[in-house]
Amino acid sequence: MRIDIVTLFPELCDSFLSASILGRARAKNLFEAHCHQIRDYTQNKQKQTDDYPYGGGCGMVLYAQPIADCLRAVQAQCAAQGRAKPHVVFLTAAGRPYTEADARRLAQYDAVTLVCGHYEGIDERVIEAFGDEEISIGDYVLTGGELASLVVADSVLRLQPGVLAEEKGYQDESYWDGLLEYPQYTRPEVWEGRAVPPVLLTGDHQKIDAWRAAQSRTRTRLRRPDLYARWCETHPLTPLPKWKRGENARLVKNDDQWQAAAALYAEGLRTVCADVCTVAYLETLTPQACREKLDAERRGGWAFYLHYTGGAADGMVGVCHKTGEIAHLFVAEPARGKGIGAKMLDFARKKLAEHPHPTLTVLDANTRALALYRRMGWRPAGVAAVYDPASDPTAAVYTQELRLRYEG
Image (cartoon, rainbow, N blue to C red; front, side, top):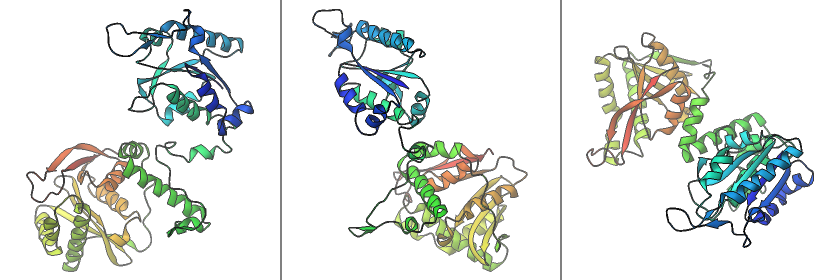
């Protein structure tokens, strides 16, 4: 691959491309890089590259002519090498946000030319005449496009064959599969009282991979919910966890089962409401109060099921055949993380076979449940309720109860 940078500071860019991993790869001719001085293409004695903007305003704007002539020279060089016309990218604050997907896309070109903006920008006419796209590396402004061009160059060139020692070196990293990377550790095992997670010391690569995957999902869900929402919709939960020997679901009928369901309901409500409701409200969520609510809902047409593992109730879910709703999907704290929630949600949906698109509600703060539902084919279908501390004495923070609809 050939990469060209059109800039007012070629020495800065060239020194970066000659250092560290990229420098070693460049020395091995794993890619070709050229940094071009815009001033070399000016047509005035002063080597001036900019002027005041038409229409007034502060700052200066880069001329179109020297950039255009530089780009024509790069095109000629590429043609002399038998290369295709280079893909031209202008680095501007007004460009489209840059992502790892863009890096992978640009890495497929034989030649890419990056043009660095400066001052108040570049004459729009040269962008229109030569630019294939405009890219921004973030929602902030730099004094020039050199750092942005080097960010793009680094992210593209590291994907070239041989630049990194192993392909896995970039496939496991943040953003490659839409998630942030899992946490990393090295020696010593204990540093200032902080120990390396025990699973990483087991040598069991299957367990280690599972731990890293879970850490990656959790980190993305908490730090970048926007990324995680997209990842969930493009990574459906297939296949679903299998029911194990000793697991079953039973319709709640006798008093012992109702007590178990009420206890699970109370525990589940306190868990999902802990960060969004007042302490006074949480104290009202007793098994007795939840039993009364379940009795009222049963009289209204709801049926409830308990999940059992080895004879012990550790999960529950409710369905309403009249309305096609699913509710009260809760798993006991010791049983969480074992796929019971996914099994019971799938079980409940299949119980409502007469409703092809059942619905359920979930608090927007319950990001873990939202992620599970999205991966299982549930999609947003509006807001069912709003809890605002200004008008709701039970609410500690503003919260929305979202309605989801099963789309498959």
